[in-house]
Length: 217
Image 1 (tube, rainbow, N blue to C red):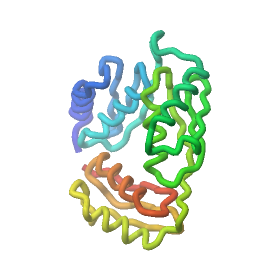
Image 2: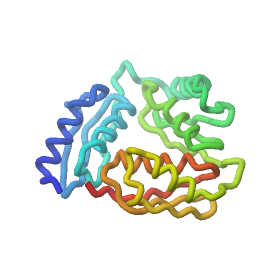
Image 3: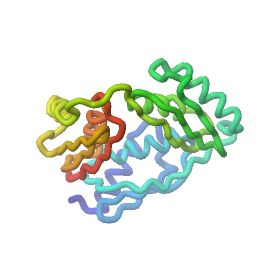
């Protein structure tokens, strides 16, 4: 386990290395491997970029995201403007059936609602709205309701994990009950943890993934 001082320096270096982020606006505190981010960023996309950067650093055991999104004057828009922009962004995203997704905006915070067939469509909807100017945050309430029931879900996910060069599949346990999948075990990084969750969501019929994988560098 890295000393907190070394981990803090590694996180700060990674934030500085991230081109889409102004690291001077981000404060980093570390305690027992838990990284807390403080400060203000200009966009919601920057906030997520900071989290992704921290997840790439070896030795991070947990992340507390206390960053606030404070758009500059040039990025400030009314809720109506943001809602209209969100609708257009969804319509232009080919992987999202835009007629099945609604966007509500309150004080710059976007809530996405609707029902889709696949998790990748749900994520694509959020990706479409994320870079819009004036967005302070997103709550993705879209439900995933596959038209077909899952068959042999556990076996399909285990096989997918085994095929992945980025994962140590033997350390991951998969339990499927009805349409919900639970992942337990250990992985070596946050990127591996996310990769395993993506593999679980890709199985036909899955409506929920409970990712309980522990990160043990």
